[in-house]
Image (tube, rainbow, N blue to C red):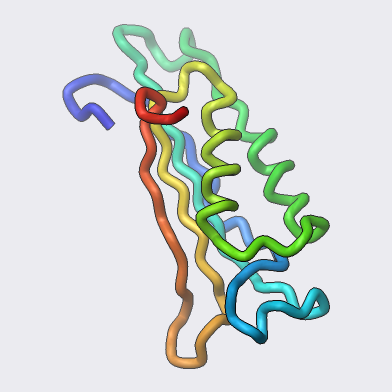
Length: 126
């Protein structure tokens, strides 16, 4: 995010969903999906506008997409899920960048969670 200009930041915090994902043998069973915690942060430049003039960034499309994760076929890599979420983040043309993280909540006994986070800019997203 360009810290020299004004931005609005929109967040979906700790959206917990289940999904069949992972590469470990114990993750390959469809009856044992992983619980995922997903965080999405959207950044959009305000310029000189007041927030009320800017309007709002509708995160319902992202939320609806995440709610569909339990019905997805098995996805081996969290990175695949991250890329798909980033696509949803850039559905609003005003979003200039986003940060998305996915954490598997129950993957290892000795860790609270394990996962991946990415920060992407629209300029570098294909």
